[in-house]
Image (cartoon, rainbow, N blue to C red; front, side, top):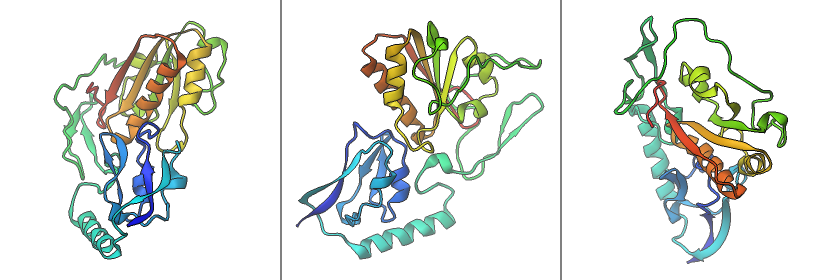
Amino acid sequence: MIRKIITIDKEKCNGCGICVEACHEGAIGMVDGKAQLMRDDYCDGLGDCLPTCPTGAITFEEREAAPFDKEAVMENMRIKEEQKRTSAKPSTCPGSSSRSFQRDNGGNCKDNHAHSNHTCQGKGARTLSVNPQEISSELRQWPVQIKLAPVNAEFFNGAHLLIAADCTAFAYGNFHQDFMKNKITLIGCPKLDNTDYSEKLTAIIRDNDIESVTIVKMEVPCCNGMLNMAKKALMDSGKFIPWQVVTISVDGNIIQ
C-alpha cells in the first residue's frame, strides 16, 4: 500500500541515536553508526522521531510500504521489556549501559563491570604518560564549549585545535597532558547538546589559521556524531589541514 512513512538521510545523520530512543515502536535502529529504518511495519507514520533529530535528517515520504502492524509492534515491545529485565545488554544505546571499574592505588583498572562484557584492557589498548605528581591545567582559552565559543578569536590563530567529546576528559586520566597541552580545546556532546556543530566548526576552521585538528571521542556509537561533524567541517572548510582521530574506551584506555 502507498502510505506516509519516515525516511532518514544518512548524509545528515550524525549518529547521535536520539531518534532510536524516541521511536517507541522500535522501527529505528543504529547500523554502522547511522540511524536506519529497520522495519516498515513498525513505523506508524506519526513522526515522534522527527522533532528529536538535531540535524533534520528525518523526514516523511509517501511510498509503497507494508501497513503498520500494531500487534507486531506490541509483541516487539513486550520482548524488549523482557530483555531489559533478563539481559545485561542495553536494548538501545550501548553508551547508556551500566558498568563499574575497580582500580588499584596506581589507577590501574581491574575488571569488575556491571551489565557489560567489556574488558578493562582491550585488544590494542594503550596508555600514555603517567605522572604521580600533581598535574596542572593545560586549558589555554575560554569558553571551551563549542556552543559558546566564538567563531573568530585571537587564540585560534596558529592553533592546534582539539575537538573532544565531553566524556573523554573524564574517562582518560591524563587528558590535559596528553591531549590538551599546547592546543586550543573545544568540547561538546553530539547526543545531549541536540545540535549539529558542523557549520560552526566549518567557520572556525575556514576563517582562522588552524594548523592541525585532533578529534577525541569515546568508543560508544553515539560519539561517532562528533567525528562526523568534525570531518564534515574539515571537508567544507576547503582547507587541507593535518588531522587525526583518537578513540577512548569507557574504562579510560586509548583503543585507536
